[in-house]
Length: 185
Image 1 (cartoon, rainbow, N blue to C red):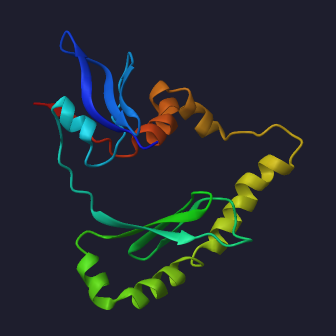
Image 2: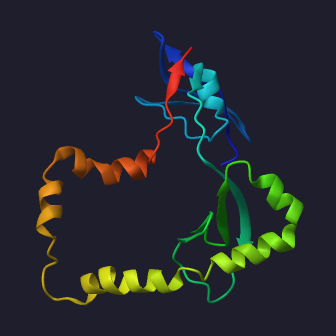
């Protein structure tokens, strides 16, 4: 870590890797495929001359960290409540929390203050634990406790025969529900 991409390796108008500056100086990494995975304000995307297509998701997300305590569960998870979404990601030594709010709702939250935000998050957290518990018992519980093969409903088996449907889970994991596209300038 501690490296920063400063320049692209370009040959015949194609990107073939990156030049980066580390703590001990300049380095070069060559690759058949160079992927810019450096965030919303991607330096690599800017160096390549790409411009993202502007989208307007109907929500904003406030990201912050919370300390992990002994006895905390290992699983990442999420909660949904009226008007809000809470995502909690296990980052080993802390929790990364994403608090989804309606688009433009930040000023209202800021005006209400930090204590109000804490109370709202505390209210959301247990809101669907019962639902999550039921889903785990109904769906996952059967998988792990049954000695019989898992049967998939006929309708789902039919859908899974369609190539486009089979690729959806990987697509959502890799790209999300709304992929962000770039345009070459």
